Length: 591
Ligand code: ADP
Ligand code: MG
Image (cartoon, rainbow, N blue to C red; front, side):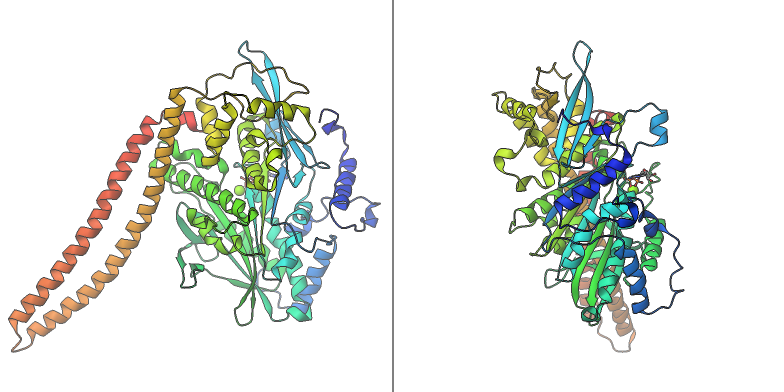
């Protein structure tokens, strides 16, 4: 690692490197001759975002649209592997921006695209307050630096999956990372580009009976809203065949790429702005755009989902002062955890996929099942020192997502992947030392992707590091000990469980209330009939009394039942409120 100078490459050399990297990793293909053998990395960003005609204005037939789609897609080489990997984890570093530069922030992330690893250079302080550099290395399927265009991201993520969609494939692509790391920037152009490729396929005679349907919805807290239908509240139900359905979701039949762009823009406008505090952003919700390929008789052929996840740092809002914010944080934490587990299950071909763990994973259930399920995780990271904790957290999460594919012996302590670095082996040695510090840290991570950072926050000052060759290469190796932290961890665990209970109870309470209203309406009809009956000449008063009593008892039973649910829910809310205060100052766990 030390022999590689990351910053020595000029932009053209980087482009050349990317081109070579692709040639090395995938089937050989022609370089772009117009650019003298170099790929123009930005050539297609404009295609994805260019001016397109308003929805419905162009009434061209599918064949004509396909020509346009072919042109858009033809620019990019498309020799993909026949059977793409089940899981791909790609990291993308965004460029440092003007504001960050002006504030004097440093770019601390080095990306080696050729060997596909990322190094985070973290400055730390020894107890004598002298600075030292801790290097954290992570390997991924692809590591993309700030020079990489959206078209290139498409080529290494969704592009290879398009043809599997036509073979009953279910593919999903997630953008994970802290708010501001580039999730939306990365995710938004992908459906436009994918639509171009898909429509290209659909123009072929053998796919004439297949249609592209597009829908878009948002999961906010534990509620789901249709982003293409005035944010209509949607219900998620499991049908008799154990298929999870988003009931009432609006789907658009799309025959031209421009419409997808319009739909994205329209969904953007409707994406949630929270009702609490000053969160005028989309960081608290997961937004999901789905492409369903269906036959004319509505049979599903393939499905592609693009998921722009809630900001990963939002999971830590569970210690916020505001209850609503805490509940949203808990739901985000839960869904990111469940997502990781579902993807890991996919990797290990596990029989049980824990999709019930959250609304997000429940909705994506069919994308985690079957031979043709494919997942791409794009971990977005910010480049500067200010974001170092989030960046490390994101990289650890992404590393865990695909950890199972690695040989056990190759697995690194705390998410560090080795490469050929002797420092890695030194870290492994340390991990096996009797204090078991690293094992403890890794164990904590199993429970929550956010726990690392939480733990870091309550940790006493890190002891001075032991001298190591070629810079230190370890993650989260600081010893964690002492009853205080153990108790704190236990307490957090209990708090997480309670949050889970509350989220479930909230849903049950609202469902029960809704059912009760429906039943009440039915009872009111019966009461009206009873009154009409008793008003008739010669009616039997005894019968009336008996029936009325029965109705009132039924009403009372239902009310007592609902009140019981409400009472338990209130108790849990109160308990949670108290617990959140004993967890320490909110600021201590926020980052
Ligand atoms: P997120 O969705 O993760 O909160 P955004 O996608 O909104 O983050 O990105 C934050 C800002 O950074 C936006 O202004 C976006 O245009 C910019 N940005 C993100 N990634 C890149 C990139 N790869 N190249 C250029 N600008 C980027
Ligand atoms: Mg965003």
